Length: 147
Picture 1 (cartoon, helix red, strand yellow):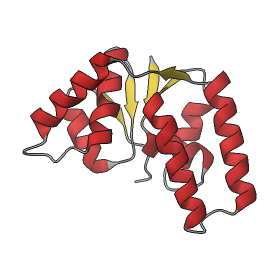
Picture 2 (cartoon, rainbow, N blue to C red):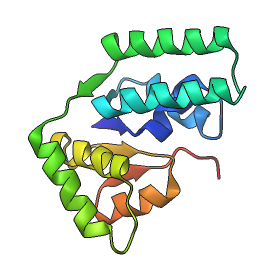
Picture 3 (cartoon, helix red, strand yellow):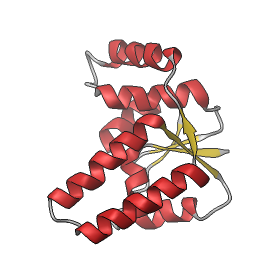
């Protein structure tokens, strides 16, 4: 089994917040962690937002980016965009858009999982609204939030 980390869970590895302890236990284990190419972009956006909101200082920002870039090169399996990912995302938007309000980037994250991961793999996500949509696809979901 491998873990596919949505950005909402991935950020918790590098910034202490609700659920950090749970994702760190997965991160420090022997299981493979997979992220999408999109998560790399979203991650940068998230940590720069934390800097602008003064949740972290410049030194911390630089350390987080440095560690994340190292992990991306040496620790994570990165999944890349393909025409199949895009088409699957459009399908999710059509299928869930009217009733669930799935966001564009969430449709892409779900599409990466469905395109590259196996049934036994786990989708790790801390966005509870998105988790409900992922569960409708009969995917094993881990929600790394404290009860």
